Image (cartoon, rainbow, N blue to C red; front, side, top):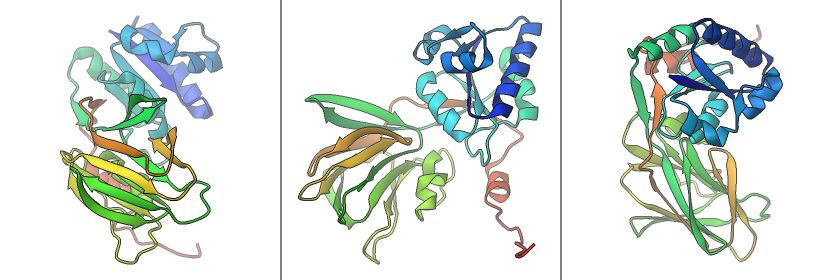
Length: 285
């Protein structure tokens, strides 16, 4: 078994943990390889471009926060991903630094379990060619630098849902419900729920609310504006500047992300610890 290791190189504690991990794997004669930028920062030649790791490795290890895990999962495709939290909130990263070695041991002896996470697939034309992108968390269309308030037209299975006058629209998976969508007032949805949530960003209508829909629905979005260009992001990565009236289609991807599960972790506890649910707040201290 061979591991691909991706490190958040902006965090010194992630780089330190990567060195400990490499020494631990070397001691056990377990094969591994670093993603190129991670290897450069660690001053090792044991590396390959991240685009090649999926064909050369069996399991991915992400050392960082949720952003690092999102980045890693994009290239891991369906290969298992061990997410080790070296960040702050860590909704997606299943394991603490202290739990990392035991998690790897379970993968090595085959006693691990997998959490399957659904993704979004976006279809959009670029240079007259239909291109598709995947997103584990969300697809976001925003007004960007447009000086006025655009209208976002949303259809479900070809039928008009509504026209939203807003600063943007977020289409999120259940996994992504605790990311940008939550910050914009969307609901928290339990992982692996077979739904998407559509959340407007700063809607300019009091009656507009987020809506939860079946993940079997096909969502079509366009921006009604006389001019301008509007950024379309997948998991925070800019994919295209949309022209007025240009349509994109969002649906459930056939490709799932396989996260190695931490069986000692439960979602209710995550909400209590990460979002401070049920905790008394003291002010001025």
